[in-house]
Amino acid sequence: MPHAPDLIFRALADPTRRAIFERLCRDGEQTVVALTARAGVSQPAVSKHLGVLKLAGLVRDRPDGRQTHYSAQLAALTPLVDWTSEMAGFWEGRLDDLEDLLKRMDQ
Amino acid sequence: MTDISTETRSVVVEREVPHPPEKIWRALTTPHLIAEWLMKNDFAPVMGHRFQLSGDWGAADCKVTALDPDRTLAYTWDAMGLKSVVTWTLTPTATGTHLRVEQAGFPQDNERAYRGATFGWQNFVGKLADVLARLD
Image (cartoon, rainbow over all chains, first blue to last red; front, side, top):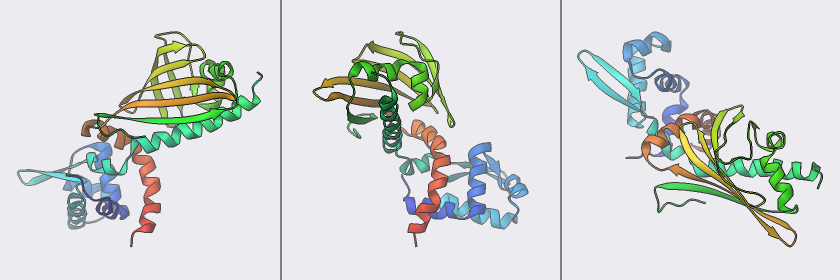
């Protein structure tokens, strides 16, 4: 179920929350304890941030005994990444440069 | 252009270029010329030739899959976990060439989009501030 872009952007607007999400993207699944060790804020604060990220569909939690493991759900970003428009913009730019080159080339 | 009726999507960009197909073909297939408008590369105009395009953002692994001088050039484009095919079509016109480039085969399924999002992440972060400015 895709989440509204607004919800995703709001969740990632906070720098601490964004740092937590980026860490999960880079380093994979982690516990709240491990995230807290590097977040620079208290464990309840990290838990609260994870709650917001979860609400936006950006993270998933997996309880394991007394620990809860969190992982990034990058698929949640799909609505934000439109490949066709990204690449259309890329090729438009390349073709501009190609035309510049053609002007400079000998026949 | 987006084709949502199939499992993959494609991008088409077309231009009327005031130069003959032969000249455009040279720009599309000569490594030092390709480097001037696209990326550094080890391209060779040989069917099946494997080459790499490298830019600041990373590299695309490619293989020539179609080669019809002054008319059609196609190569696979494998970058950031996304496999696609780039096809160049040159059609002579009264004033030059109708140039068409199509990149096809962006998968729609989540797993691939997932990887695409991973790459898009850096851009995405850059754009985030702009979008945030529009939210209340």
